[in-house]
Length: 240
Ligand SMILES: Nc1ncnc2c1ncn2[C@@H]1O[C@H](COP(=O)(O)OP(=O)(O)O)[C@@H](O)[C@H]1O
Ligand SMILES: [Mg+2]
Image (cartoon, rainbow, N blue to C red; front, side, top):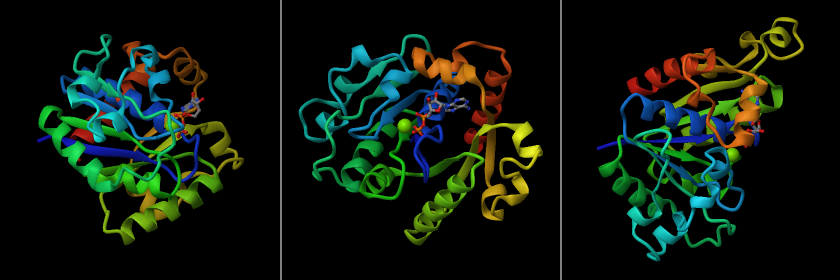
């Protein structure tokens, strides 16, 4: 049985979709069978970041509504052997999908895949609760901004109240110069629960920004410092 990992955050724009795409591609590069599921219904981006937007025929809602079978909605990413993608519905959620539906989907996917990676919507509303339906682990993507720390803290607290305790953190868009000069919060200013459970840092790098625009996960280019960093993060994820 595979593992379902939900990538979430308090604030929007912290890098969930960028992180999902590159973690998935790296795990696939390590020989795992991985499916990336876009659960950011209505505000989807993962198809663009993967450059697979023209390959989408069926989406998660079609699967859950019985319009198609799971296999019909799986798109193979030919650049990364073992990496598959399932798109989000372009229509906003009309309330028909429940966390239980998503749990059943994740259970079925984890019979086929080693990792089911769910790109969740930002914030605390129903979309997150639905995306969390099948979660074994949650990774919250946070940026070095006080607003992001506060929102992340609120989401973590709410998750813990719901009994979800397998929470880990990725600190993204790290700018060491700003953090050292005191112009962005340094790690000592983050709550202990967060710093103790950080599984990786990703630097702010305009190449990452360019890669999401081009629809090519940045880890496609091997042996860069970013590729190495994602390798280390993936190794930690493999230990969860
Ligand atoms: N480490 C990074 N360095 C530079 N730009 C980044 C980084 N991470 C994400 N971005 C950019 O930030 C924007 C938001 O990222 P995205 O993954 O869409 O966030 P989310 O899914 O959390 O809303 C995108 O334009 C993306 O290219
Ligand atoms: Mg996103």
